[in-house]
Length: 478
Image (tube, rainbow, N blue to C red; front, side, top):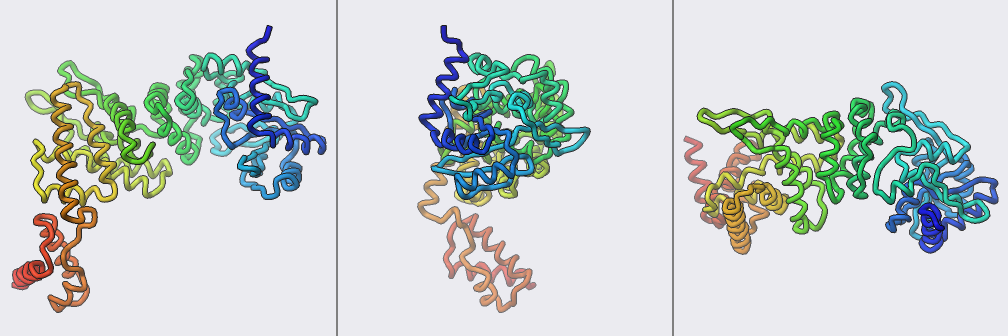
């Protein structure tokens, strides 16, 4: 009777022959050199999940210098970015090959960098890997490819569960980033995290503090860009991991008093993330900026919360405070400058729509809304619509209708004016010529005055703009 492991073995080896025969060819070169070569880790997992990509991972008993010699002869161009960790990369026929010497790496004390040690055993190499579903291999240098699964990875793959090859406390002690990887794999693969693994994540959350911001950033982005970021964020918050690198999110779980002075800001924020994802086609597909803005748009609320006499609660200027907090946190997490600026600006603007009451938008208000949003106008449309999470159907319909009206007003004005490139009817050179002044602060003030007129009244034309400029100049000269 065929066992799950033997069935998986046949599937994996057959799929490898079909989809990446170059791997078997490469193995002959390692075998000639007296070395082993095995497809390993996520590549084996993905073959079994029928989602193998173009990146293939291998492990070998060959040392980096030996790997380089073989790969240069076989593939030609190679890269050595990961050589100090025992990894050499190459590309052939649209496939990317990364070959790593058997290794064992651990974090010691409060070091942010792992100590890497090379080994001679694939069994030890697999034991040091993060999860059992990533601790399978296909040895390619034996007489026929051999499937290796010492930690029951196939079983866990079938039941969609993340477990560690050894005790989770040892695994996370070796590399605390694996705790974030657990949350990431859970959302990417749709797997559950085993209870003992979750328990270890909670107990060892403080260990994450020794991991560099860059490595945390990478895992967090993958969670945010996954199909179900809510699950990942919830896992991070519930285990205490989020507190170590993004404490603003668990702080959104404001205590709801008996008078229900406010809705659950934490759950609301997760709902906004999901609702923004449902509108992402307007942005061309999955979008990191909108997902971050949705998650962080209310992080200023805990700091601005105040009870109102007679009941109720206010969060005055939480968008201003939140934008500042967003910048500070995303900088610490090593996000790119433009991502930081864009997310912070969306947090700052996310209440702007509600400042115009019942949807009666003047031309001036529309121009200012578009001017302030700039290149982020569509992002702001998505965020504002996603921010409506009320269960009151009539209220939700009214908000949607009002925003439909705003977008219609923007569209109508765009047909008449260049709303996305609003500028005064006179440029700086013309201002200097008309006023007979040289470049300086006065030119900037005049420019701002004309810009305000342009926003308030629309295009003036050069003649009227000249008259308005001279009138302004006369008043400022007296």
